[in-house]
Image 1 (tube, rainbow, N blue to C red):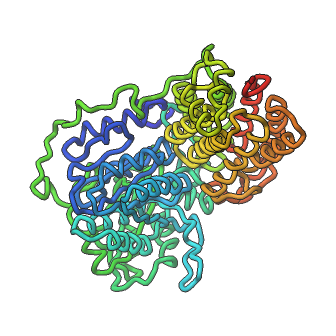
Image 2 (cartoon, rainbow, N blue to C red):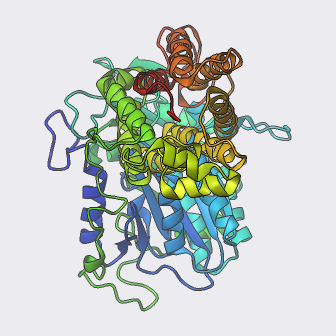
Image 3 (spheres, one colour):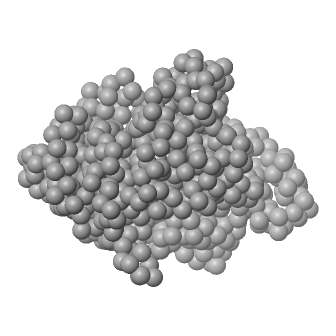
Length: 628
């Protein structure tokens, strides 16, 4: 399926839609599609009075995450695009479909995009009165330092979540299934995570749907020890190991990091990453089992198979969870999901037929999950739509370059994700913004009455007015974040939406005309929002390194009395130079930070795409954003 010769699921544009629909058709007895959403919910959910366990993450890791939905496991899963987090909107809708009134536990791997989007969804649910808890999975010993008992800050919090997800999801799901309250379910999940460790090895890279070349490669005759499930670099390269040598390497990298082993029972998961054959895994497990026994450990219900994959990556990972009586009971409890069952047949007397009950509610083409068509400019486009259209076109021209820059961090999806997000942003802006036929004079007349007039201008659709532009940017930002997903999608979405919020505030304060000072205020507010959301700082090799000089120059141009049509391109030029200069920075934030100095010499993909977008917007500006 994910090979150099694309299989039947190889169309990148529709891949997520296609495979989720196929899963819902194939396993209609167990799961159903959440209407209008890239998510699935178990046939057993929602159950009144039961805590909902909601998991999720990017496509490309099946059975994680949608394959682990069912009684005794997760109640629902929100699915992102390839190796990207689901958007906050998708997480929110999925959680709503699973909520039985006892609260929602979110649990997922520790990746920046997932943290941001699930966090935004949790905030939205809290505002609506839905209680939530969040447990991040941090089991990968190769991605960060070990915990230090009694330390005020746990250094393991930066570890990523890999195949240990399975243990955390399973025990949390069993606790919820037996009727535990939200705090108790969260406690179990945290305990399972604290007791779980994973270490993996890769023999060959993976190929994304529709691609003709692997995302990354492993040198012939070698393997990477500690490589992540998105191709993040491992701890070290070594010669190709045989089954016994590999088992030794896996176990030896886990034993020193295991927490207190109690009575010696450990749950064991030997996980294939997508291409490794079961016979090969069994050959390796033979030696894993013997090595664990020699260390005084007793494997409990060991599992060998594919649980958290990476498309067709060749490799395996070994996960161990140190057990106490409660964790053993929960891990041993019955469950029934598309990919994993503890006991055969339906449970709890539920009737799950093989015929889909929601076939008549499949999303229409205009629904949020439908692919957004490639936008083309029209004569009726308002100024914001025209600016975003120009940004989309220039960024799309550089999509492959952005992917190559992002691949330095082991991911490679930035170009695909941002182009997809901008495509949705243009469509949303075109639907929200008044047509150009509404004159600027109409906008100014409508906005003349201060805040009330500004709101009237927005309703009337004043061309170029701050209120109309603010509302349009808000719609575009939400659409971009939803379509793009991942950390970049969340940050870009916040950038557009918060800039729009700044323009809306200006309109309500009686400033309907967009001058350079108004733009500078809005961009400053957006900068602060992106800093708060992403947690990064200038100098850490992120898009902030292009955004900060842009806003600084824009403020200086405002002080000098420059009009937007002159000020914006000048600021965009500073952003472009700063983006190029990120090649001299070492990553200090996000997935790229784990590469250390290996990222040196390559410009940051996010800073580069932002500079392209700002440049294109500058080119699109008329003599003034508001001719009046």
